[in-house]
Amino acid sequence: IRTGINRNVQTLQNLQNLSDNEEGWEVGALEILFQHREITRLQWRDSRLRLLSERRSPYYDEVLQHGMMYEGSHDLTATCAVAKRSSAPAFSSSQFWPGVQGRGLELIDMCLAVSLPNMGSGFFVMSYSLQSVLQDMIAREAQRGRIISFTEVDGTRLAILGGNRHERMLMAQVVLELPGQVMMLRIESPRELLTTPTWGITSLVMALSALLVMLLGLLGYDMRLRLQAQR
Image 1 (tube, rainbow, N blue to C red):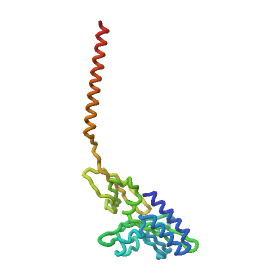
Image 2: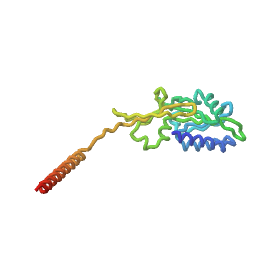
Image 3: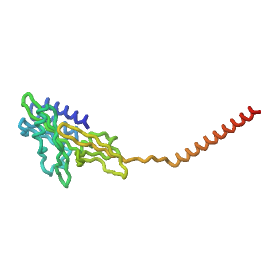
Image 4: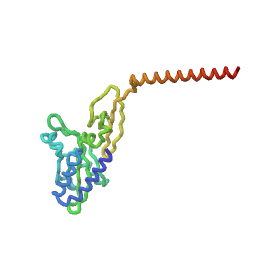
């Protein structure tokens, strides 16, 4: 996940090269959205956070097209201020945005301060779906048979992938620390009991029996040699 996010930061930085005008930026932004399902929206804002241009992912129209318009996290101003001071990307706190039929997305914004030769300073804002981060930024092999989730530090669940819970589960969690945001990544796997098939037990008994017969034969041969030596 960290590697994927760092690559997305580099992609967003490269978008500056296409931002001589609004049309060029929108073409580049749309290409990024098609390639990265975890990104729900890209925005270009000026130094006062006024919206200059915006592109939304086509993958989330079904969820959000009839829902409320997502305007950004409530702490976007503070997040972009941190990004400007640190000259590095900064992340907002997560926010659930309702969609249609009770569905919705848990979203988090990443703000990056940019300086464009012909357009002046401003910000690029990238919105992530935490559910899609789990689904599209984690290898399929790692997902198989496991329950993977994002939670707050206090345990509040933000997003979850997989749902086949067993009675006996092994759980591991790691801190995912991003600039301005800290989450827990939790992985649960079913505990596989150590079992031996019936044919395996039968083969083991037969092998031990054969070994015992061999040892008895060696013992009898050794005793005969001893008796011959005594005579």
